[in-house]
Image (cartoon, rainbow, N blue to C red; front, side):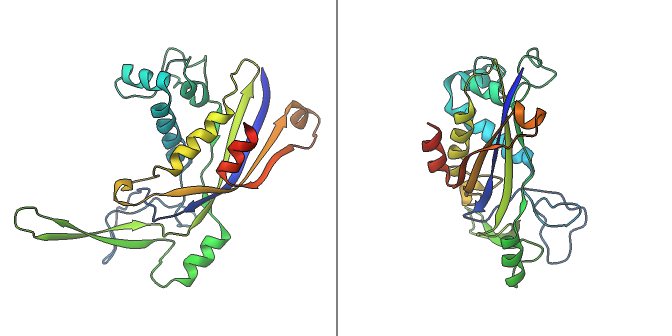
Length: 240
C-alpha cells in the first residue's frame, strides 16, 4: 500500500562540457556530425530523464555487492534480484519474472535549462542554440597524421532544473538514502558521453527535499519540507 512520496528538486550544474548524443539527419555545413539531443519544441538541449536514471542505476549497481552479483549473473544486464537495493529502487522490467513484485519506485523527469542558462548562452557568441563545438584530433600512432573532428556539447556553467520522485510503500525497505548515494557517485563520475576525456562532470545543487504522504493527496494537506537549498553533502548528513 502506498505510504508517501519524496520530491527531490534542484539544479544540475555542468562543471565541464556535457554531451548526451542525439541524431541529425541533415548535417549543416560547418556543423557537427556528433550532435546533442534537443527538445523538439524549443530546439534547445536538455538532459533526458532516461539518461540520468540509467546512470544512477548503473553506478548504484556497481557500488552494491548484491546488485553487482545480479548484474554479473544477468551477463551485464540490469539487476533483477529482489533482495538488492538497485532492483528495489529502479524495479524490474515487465518482461522479467519478478516484474510485478518490484515495479520502479523512482521517477526521473527530463531536465530543462534554467533561465540563468538561457542568459549565459545568449551572451556568448560561440554558443549557438545552447551548445558549443569542441574540436579534437585523432592521431595516427604510426605516421602522426591527424584527423580533426568536432563534438557538439553543452558548455561549462550551464544549469538544468531536475526533479526526482521517490515513492515509498509500506512493505519497502528504507532506500531513500541509496538514491542520494547514487547521486553522490555520479558527481564523481560523468553523465553522457566522452567522460574519460573530460566531458560530463556535473554537480547537484540547491536541492530541496519534500515529503507528501497520503494526507497530501487525500485531504489536500501541505507537503512537509525536509531540506531546502542544500548541496548533496548537506542533504546526506541531514537524512542520516
